[in-house]
Amino acid sequence: MHRRSFVKKSALLGSGILVAENLFAGAALAPINIAMIGCGDRGKGVLSVIQKMPSQFNTVAYCDVLDFRLEETKKYVPSSAIAVKDYRKVLDDKKIEAVFIATPLSEHYKIAKDAILAGKSVYVEKTMTYNIDQALELRKLVKQYPKQVFQVGYQYRYSPLYFRVKEMIQSGYIGKVSQIDCRWDRNWNWRRPVKEPSLERQINWRMYKEYSGGLPAELLSHQIDFINWAFETQPDEIIGTGGIDVYKDGRETYDNVQAVFRYKNAGMIGNFGATCGNAHDGYLFKIKGTKGSVNLLPDTGVFYPELETKRQLGIVDGVTGATKLVVNTDGGIPILDKPTKDGTFYALEEFYKAITEGKTPVSNINTGTQASICVAMCNEAIYTGKTQFWKKDYF
Image (cartoon, rainbow, N blue to C red; front, side, top):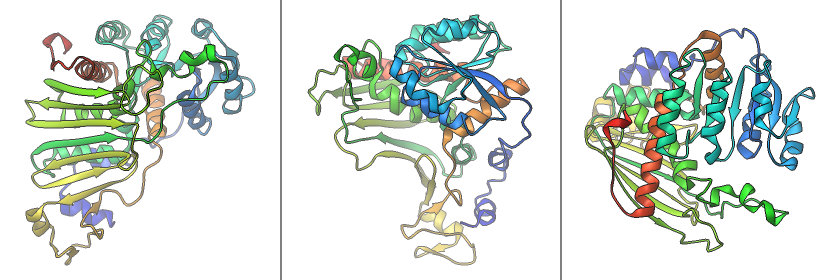
């Protein structure tokens, strides 16, 4: 796509759009000494990105309760990094300025609380906490330590693509939005191999309610959080259903879920669903407005104008006149001219800048609390079949 044409034609010249692609540019100051707590798939994934950012982060220590995980992590950290099994040793190390928390969900609150009290800045993976009470308590605590950065790992908030879509929504470019369709499907049992049966619950913690928020917390929370952010709202009511419909293997969290969020103030309905029994749609994210629709993937997005919007853009019979807009064969206009980087990179850039420049990250304690409440309400609706309502004391 010719960026200049789309930006001019769509009248998206607001500061948010112009800044988005250069949001993370700037000279590095000094690397921050960090530690990773939790070295499973996500922990190692974040460390693999940190490896490529040596001027910003220096991994001093890495922590996990499982020996084989510590062994696997060696290739993602400097040879000088120390492996520990007790996260409290990480928090006692005065050299460490910030910690990343990528443990099972049930451990997020305890470790994040201890890290804040130990004077560390914190990057905690989504979902921020296991339940609503923990979210409210953590928010109260973090606000008592404003000099420490607290960031939640919703990496799509930092992508230039998703910044641009937020601006399209806020500027009214896609019109009045009434429907949002979100899915994150896979055709896989979600299990990790377990060599030692006694480690089943530690390795496959996502299968068990004691540790996990299931599909809403691990997958759908990304899209739930983005809608909160992009529309500056939250759901008033949530209904849901689900079951263990595909894999009858002793798991407790559902492998097939569907929830409907009603955003009364915004006049919208959000449909959020996930299954482990079919991968055709994969990651599906559609935002439907009176002037057009946005279809999003993690790194690319397409705008589909409605009929009247096509006329305004000079699109006739699927092709443009003199607008220079690039239109796909299906009638969609690419939002960016190339895919974005892994969203984790943008999120880590933001964490570094927030610490070195004393700024509040886009995904912070307030937004993390909001998303945690939404996920907990969603799960309660799914597991009980009862409608859940947003409460005033959640604000």
